[in-house]
Image (cartoon, rainbow, N blue to C red; front, side, top):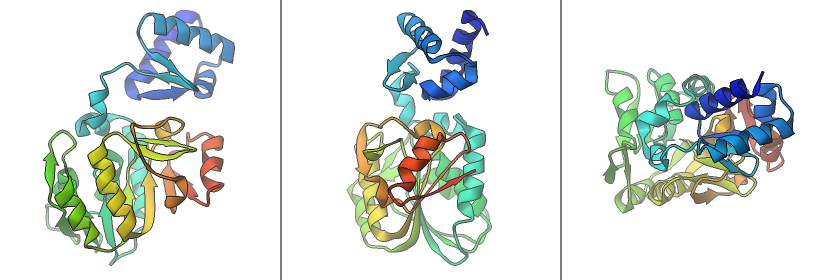
Length: 251
């Protein structure tokens, strides 16, 4: 692959996902690390990306991270596979808290005909359950964040603190050795309450979420019981989780 083709391929990758790591680019481009580093430097000079430790970030406005529709389109096939696998971790009759992320919405879609009780702060997920189905739904209430289509803030957190659940299924903005993180303080506030009241914590996150932090720290890695990701998750990130006692499933 020549230089122009590599540059085009890197741009295409970063149009679909926010972050790509250096080693993944080397594999995808069948190029050496030094060659890929030069390509990234060239593209950064053109303001097509931003180099960061371990890889590169796309240069789209960061407010897309708080846009449910944009997130739902991103890594859509990986999210559907993750959703199918994560749904098998829920037993009939359980009470499950469903966080407001687009990957969690894929899990909810798989649970739509199951006899469970869902607690959610997500309007998008509630709409998946609006047709007659076996799911009983409780909404948290709270301040509506329109772009994310979730309810957040003190009222939401107070409601969550008053319940108990068999499991929480939660999306995430970033995963590093330092722990899990997300992109908004109010989102993290509600997610902390969800973790506190659930007996099992299940994180659903495609491989692009690993190796970089989001803006607001949420919890150390060992707060999760299970992480469900996709088959492209690099082995070092899987080991990072398993070393902290977290079970890792790949879809």
